[in-house]
Length: 211
Image (cartoon, rainbow, N blue to C red; front, side, top):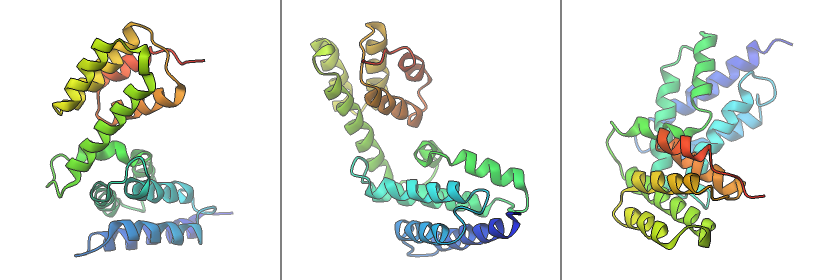
């Protein structure tokens, strides 16, 4: 069956919610939840990008309410960015719609695109998340990491040099072939993606997974 009508319905939901996200005094988090409800109750299984759109709004709201992230201002900034980009898409151009959903497969990775915009408090939450996650990785590694290396990484974190901390941890784990759990490795890789650290990504690809 053709998905033209469901696609059109999805685009109307996306456009309506995105316009409201940019309205004065809007609550992007609540609008994200509303978008999820409209999509799951209507076109999640029939529109070409129904599932992708639902996941997009779910992951945007996760930035505010997931216990490992819990960053409302970061959520609001990313949601406004996603909504603004959608409003710039020509929904009659199939390739443009595909590119949009491809680009927003992992909303948190679009954080770097916010750096030219006014802060609005999201940077503090973003950096707190980076620090907390890198410290969690150090905790997961535990005694496998030499104390001097752990101290150097912690020193970078204390100084707010999160990029240096990430690169150093990835380098040491790679150089000494220290195996870490797959979950920890994926978390480290996500942070490297989020920070656009090509060096860390190369090192992470060589870190062995603990059996």
